[in-house]
Amino acid sequence: MFMTKPMEIEDRSMEIIAPHLEGLALSDDEKKICSRIIHASGDVSYAPIVKIHPEAIATIKAALNRGANIFTDVEMVRRGISIRTFTKFGGEIFCKVSDVDVREFAKREGITRSMAAMRIFGKRLNGEIVAIGNAPTALFEVLRLAREENIKPAAIIGVPVGFVGAAQSKAELIAQKEIPYITVEGTKGGSSIAVAAVNAILYMMDNSRGLNEK
Image (cartoon, rainbow, N blue to C red):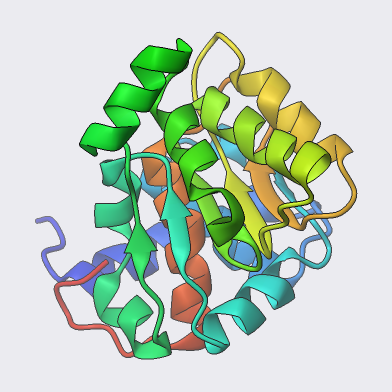
């Protein structure tokens, strides 16, 4: 016999995950983020490689409470965030990767569309939340904007995935000192991981979810 109720499945999953977080010196909120990332990936090896800036959770909560927007690199991240919970705080979620102006700009400049989208967002990123789940180039660009153009998001959830640039972009995110972040070391990551981190914080703030919502 298998479980069929969504919240019972989730609760049991969290019970299975919990022992893998023991000994990692995580706060309760950090455990919730790590647990949801492991739950989303089905991979307990994420436990020691999730890196959360000491101010990230409080900063993201404060930003959401004042109605901050979220800017994403791909539609999978935008669509995965719990819109039912997020919209209670008054913000919007933006993704321009498929827009005509982004495609044209990327082609003209010889860069990726995700990178072009972040460059076009530009000053709109100031004080907002950036969630990158796919493209290392998008994360590199946000960090360049911060370093060279003094454009500072409130926080960056940066977990691009892959073998070219992903580990390096996340190492650069961890190395910088000005913007709180949530990330994972190495080549792992992806849109589902970015979504898991965002939703973990949303559910800390408001867990009045429907029975069929994860």
